[in-house]
Amino acid sequence: MLTAHFDHLGGSLHDYFPGADDNASGVAVMLALADYFVIHAPDYSILFVATDGEESGLYGSYAFLQNSPIPVEKIKLNINLDMLGEPERGCRLAVFHRLLGKEQQQVIEQYVQPQTECALRVQGRMFRTQQGQQFDWLRASDHYPFYRQNIPVIFFGGSAHERYHTPRDNAANLSRTFVMNSAELVLQIIQRLDQLPD
View 1 (cartoon, rainbow, N blue to C red):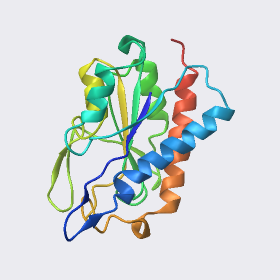
View 2 (view 1 turned 180 degrees about the vertical axis):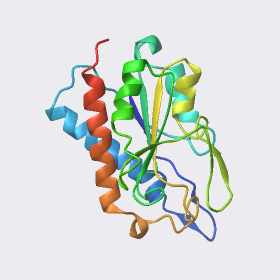
View 3 (view 1 turned 30 degrees about the vertical axis):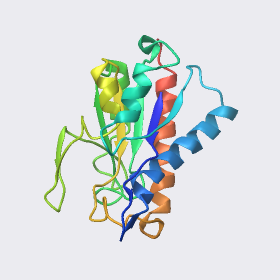
View 4 (view 1 turned 135 degrees about the horizontal axis):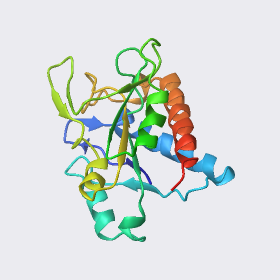
């Protein structure tokens, strides 16, 4: 199951928050992947879910699990996409995962190349930005309710940059190359995971 939240902070009397990176970028990648898999059918079924209410408390993903159209125990993996528009430290895409099986972890590890500038970087649970903000990657986005249901999760994200949750998170600041590279990397990993036995 692929998730990406389509809500953002909206606007106020004086400011508008476009949310281009957080999280139009994740939704765009999810839609591109959905378009790809319509033509190139995977072995496993993939459910694509755009969630709402992430910013205010992960309400959309909690609501989905409480009213799932399929039995929750049939969800074998949640891949969550959030903030794929601006790279973290150069052009590196961060990945955070929990509850993966050994073979699933090996797939992720094959894409971690620390000697390469543009690579996948495994993220620990806690993360401090250059601005001093601290993030708990386990609870940071819509993968957390799935984790609480004992469903394995993989979270792909970019950077909590200085424009995070500000009106300056707009399309002009996105890296089109990074979005496309992230989409390609996530696609390759999904294809590898799709080849694993049940």
